[in-house]
Image (cartoon, rainbow, N blue to C red):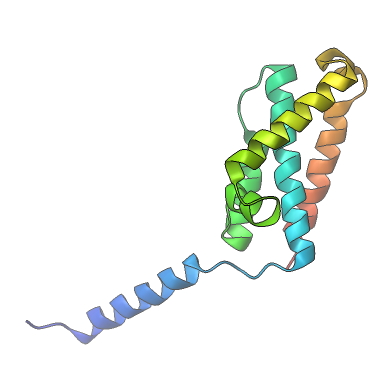
Length: 136
């Protein structure tokens, strides 16, 4: 069997490239805290949109997921598992339960809208997204 040198070199380059892509970028404690806050905020924002605006798409969570993947090769679920709690499904359920309790304490969607909860969520989301985008 004859294997040419360029094919071997190509195979080696591909293997090296794939291993580099699978490695997660190092995340310091402060960046981990910001990632966790953005994951929580994006989930809450999407819950608000689903519950109070009838918009079931998870756009903020998806945008956060893209940012985490491009910068750190992490998904939102991995961020939740690493920086919030070990079981991402249980933590998502807890975040949802806490948010819905908060919404109920405010008096439901009508009062949340009057108190400008969406603006607060949007401001927090944008601020955290920008901070993480500007991290090295």
